[in-house]
Image (tube, rainbow, N blue to C red; front, side):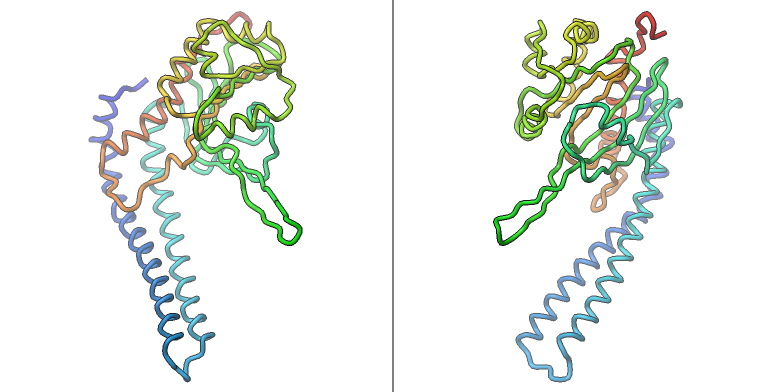
Length: 323
C-alpha cells in the first residue's frame, strides 16, 4: 500500500496540475454564491425602502416578481456551477487518489452502499425514512472483497400538541459505512456499539434501547469493554469471531480514530463498520484555494485509513474454510 512520501510525489507530479486547472471553476462557483447572497441583500433592502417610501407607480407584487425571477435565475446558475465544479473535482482528484492507493479499487462519485447491506448490519435498528449516500469505493485488497461509501440516514419525527403538528428529520447515521468479506465462516450476529461519548452517546443509547435479538456480553479485555458494548446471538460464536488478537486490533484501530464514533458488526460471514463523522468528507472547498497539499492530503489519509482496515484487522488471513 502506498505511503505518505509516495503521495507527496504523486501530488507534485500528477494531482497538482489538475488542481490548478480546477481553480477557475472554483472561483466562478464562489462568485456565483457571492452574487446570490448580494441579490438577497438587495431584495431585502428594496423591501425596506419600499415600505418606508411611497412609490404609487410600483406595486409590492411587481417588486416581488422582479426580485423573485432574479433570485431564481441566480440560484439555478449557482447550482449548475456547483454540480460542474464538484463533479470535476471528484473525477480529477478523489478518483485519482483512490486508484493511487490501489489499482484494484474503483470509485463512483454517485454510488453508495446499498440499503440492504446497511440494514443487514443490524447496527441501527430504527426505521429509516431517508437514505442518502455517495462516493462509493469498492474492490479487492488481496483476498478480501470490500466496499465503502458515505451514508446519511434519518427518520421523520412528527409531534403534536393538539393544535399544531410539527415534523422534523432526526439524524441516525452520517459517515462512512464499510462492508467486507470476513475471514471466518460463521452464522448469527455480533454487534459492537460505542460504550460512551459526548456527541454520539445519544445515538448509542437510542440504538441499544431498541429491542434487539442480540444479548449483551462482556469480554476479557478491560480496555475493549471501556470502548464498546457487545451484543451477540451466540456467545460461543462471538468469542470465535472476536479472538484476543482481533480485539487488540479493534482497540488499536479505535486509537487511530480518537473522538470518532465507531460501530462494528459481524453478520453472516461479513464485517460492517460505521465511522460517524456528521459531515460530508469528500466535497471540495469553495472559499479557499484547492492548491494546498495539507488539505488534499487529508483526503488521502481518510481514504487510506478505511482501506487499511483490511490489513489492520488482518482480514486477509483466511481461517480454514475461508480460503
